[in-house]
Image (cartoon, rainbow, N blue to C red; front, side, top):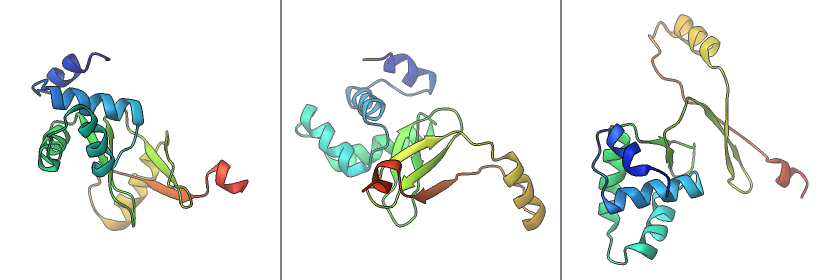
Amino acid sequence: MNNYTRMLREHHLKATPQRLEIANALDCNGHMTIEKLYEVMLQKFNSISLATIYKNINIMIENAFIQEVKIPNEKSVYELSKERHSHVVCTKCNAIKDIMLDLSQTTQLASQVSHFKIDKADLVLSGLCQKCQQL
């Protein structure tokens, strides 16, 4: 396992066995729904409840250890927090990929047009992945 204990402590979180396994699952599998995470967790903790998963996910989000990715018309997925990035989602196979985009000009323009002070920008683009384009 990576040094998830250190990483959790850096985010002011106790390194419980469940949190260590959540970190490992997200690191190994990337973007995961709560349901998929629950399936993975059941393999290691056969009596774990869905409520325990939600409780840990929420605490880990509050402490910026993981982040929620809200995908339009789909269930949210979760990933380990990392540098700011956007996402592309395949409308056919639901594959999700991280992309590095500088959204500073977009947020600046949005701020000018809306007169809002923009403090966060999340971008999810959808289309067909390369594999699905070839089908």
